[in-house]
Image 1 (spheres, rainbow over the protein chains, first blue to last red):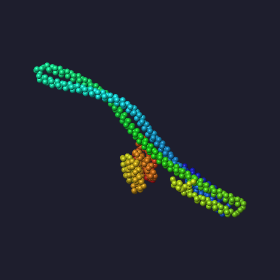
Image 2: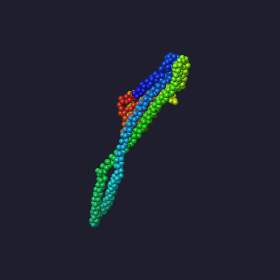
Image 3: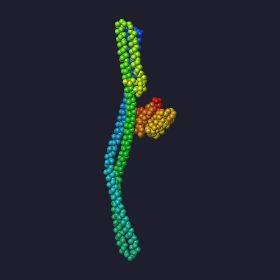
Image 4: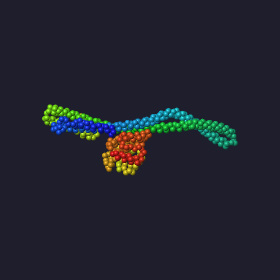
Amino acid sequence: MASSAPLQGLLPRWRQRLADWIAPGPCPAAGKNDPAMAGLRELDRQLLLQLGRAVGLSETAALSFVERLAGLRSQSSKLVTYLGHAQTQSDAMQDGIELNSRIIHELSSFVQTLPAQIAQERGHFRQLVGEVQGLSALTDTIRGIARQTEILAINAAIEAARAGEAGKGFSVLAGEVRRLATQSNESASRINQDISRLVATVEQGFSGDFAARTRHNEAEAQRLDRLTRQLDDSYVDMRQFYDMLMTAVTQHNTELDRGIGGLLDTAQYQDVFKQIVDRLAPAMHGRNDVLADLLSRLRAGQRDTSDIDQRAQALAAEYLVLEAAHRDPDAAADAAPGEPGQRIELF
Amino acid sequence: MAHILLIDDDDLLRDTVQQMLELDGHKVTEAASGELGLQQFARHSGRATSAGGFDLVITDMLMPGTDGARVIVELRRGQPDLPIIAISGGRRVLSAQFNLETATLAGATCQLAKPFSRHDLQSAVHKATAQR
């Protein structure tokens, strides 16, 4: 990983400098194989070993930290990109819904004019019904005339039978028949006029305007139906969009949470490092005291330094006992993700 | 060859994809909804392929009820390394690209935009199963 490369070089260098600092013999005046130095060399070796382990642990933790951080950054970046696209989707859906809403608002104006239109059409039809009822009355009149004509015809037949004796009766009947004929003609004329009016009313009612209005109304009603269905579909889409968005983001958040948990686990190793160094400090102080004592004796010309080695060995043993009381940090470094508590020192 | 659970509410597409997969020698179990798919998976969960366990799941994203994102999350919860291919053709303004991005975020192994060829499907199946 590119971002962790500088650390990979830097940490070993630090470790080497640490080793160089602590590795030289404790006293140049003393011989390398001086028995008095054996205990101090052992103490130094143990201290260096633990410091090396601590630095190694810190290095592993730092690399792991950087790696996990890069992973989190990638996940976070993915989420930001996704949410940007989600915003675009949401805007597109919103635009569609707003357009439909505007058109539906326009259609609502059309719907508001419908009652007046319907009232007008109803007026036309009421007039039509009135005309038809008028025709019905005329039909009754004609039917009455026909009935009377029939009676007259019968009477005329009777009178005809007696034609020779009462010719006057025929003239009366003829007059009546003429009068009825006149009435029939008048009725026929009125019927003609009424039918003409009726036809005019019907023509007006079903004129081109009416047909156009009807077609327009039908088209607008269909558009309203279509837009309403589109709105319903948009609602279904919107609901599914948010459902999926929430599911995906929640899942992604769970992954991020897991990643952050891993990061926190790694951060705890820095405290393990500090604990190792803290335990090193008393041993280092003891080492310094032993060295100071050795130096003062050598400056005073004392050759007997056998107890110095014993003190150094005692310090090394004490340090080892103290270190053994703690769990092996390397084991903690190998801990599986998500299980830090089982193998890491708690403090 | 793999035992594949195919989840899609579109009967025609399901039949077509099933035939494509069977031509390549795979065994296919189909489900017409997210709910049925999860039920099928639960029924075979924990079994080896020879005993009816699934090697791969192919799921549509836009389905009524339990959608593809929910299916993926539920499957992942039970079997984190299960290969899952998400397929989607989009609907009205809900684009296929967005649906497939959602699938990725939810945990799909790879994605296929509808319509896809037999070769596309073969590649996706190979890629998904190879990552296991």
